[in-house]
Image (cartoon, rainbow, N blue to C red; front, side, top):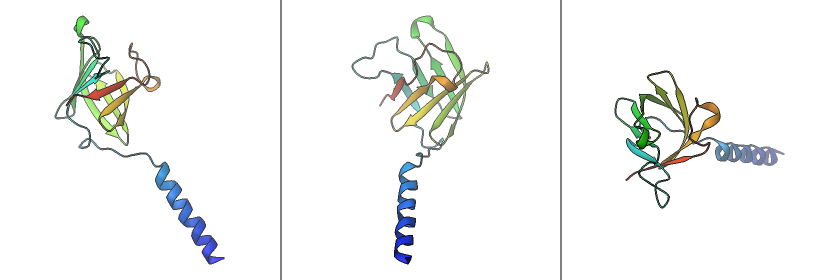
Length: 121
């Protein structure tokens, strides 16, 4: 009976470890430029996010319309929140060298849900 309880307890610990969200902190987020569709599909007008020191960011939805959103960012587990100086909020999920847009939790933008912004090396 003790072996059975130990086995069940061990399996629960393994299952909990496998299902846990990856935790990130602001120090894990790479400073620099993230570009939508970096790679073969990239064009000069793709949306761009620049993560800067001091928790600041620039969000350029389209180079051609020259509108730049500025503000501060924070990281909570695997979520990156960009909070503009105008009070708008944009939420992304952090995935190693990319961040993926979460439209449902963000304020209005033309960016599609799940759009990946890849870190430019």
